[in-house]
Length: 238
Ligand SMILES: NC(=O)c1ccc[n+]([C@@H]2O[C@H](COP(=O)([O-])OP(=O)(O)OC[C@H]3O[C@@H](n4cnc5c(N)ncnc54)[C@H](OP(=O)(O)O)[C@@H]3O)[C@@H](O)[C@H]2O)c1
Image (cartoon, rainbow, N blue to C red):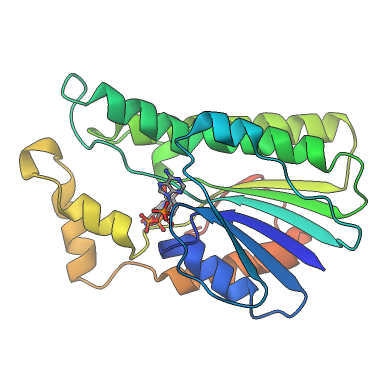
């Protein structure tokens, strides 16, 4: 069997990836988020708020005797305050760093520990963003958390190479601009707080957003054929 731990399966990209993977009878999906929206015989949900860092630290991955492949997809993410530095809520900053960077980093560490002796093929996919790689004014928290997780992924890749391990694959994938609630949130930001807002409004009006289902199709191909994807850092738009 193949086991997939996916954060943020209640909607958007995470839900589409979970539903795509559940099409395969050999796959079991364990979804992690505050709300459960998927019901399926091979789906289990862990109700979890990734902002509760002590609970994230205590989370223990299940051990499996029959696992061919075990995958962690860190997909949960929040945009956080879209505003200029000096005008953000410090409480919201803490929560965004927790959900986007600290919780995924802790989960990766726990995953690598839990399955260190497992013979299964292991894979970690972190959902990144173009905003990890270039600055966007008013997105300081989002850019920096995504950049931090991308660097964490690259250090892990370096350690895997150093140890000459071929049982673990890691990826940091920017999915493109996807038609989800997160995009609705971007378009709802007051104009004066976000100078690039019009670009996102135009993309929606011109039907230029990618569907979550299309991202899920590409993700399923990466999972099935990682040998075809030699780069740790990827952008699905390339
Ligand atoms: N949409 C885009 O254009 C785009 C572009 C680049 C990258 N991304 C990235 O893709 C990922 C998915 O984004 P999306 O567009 O699908 O967003 P979305 O529709 O807003 O969904 C976000 C998911 O994250 C989960 N989440 C949020 N806060 C959480 C918390 N405190 N604890 C646990 N889970 C939490 C939500 O689950 P609950 O509310 O049930 O907890 C939800 O399932 C994110 O990492 C995002 O940064 C999106």
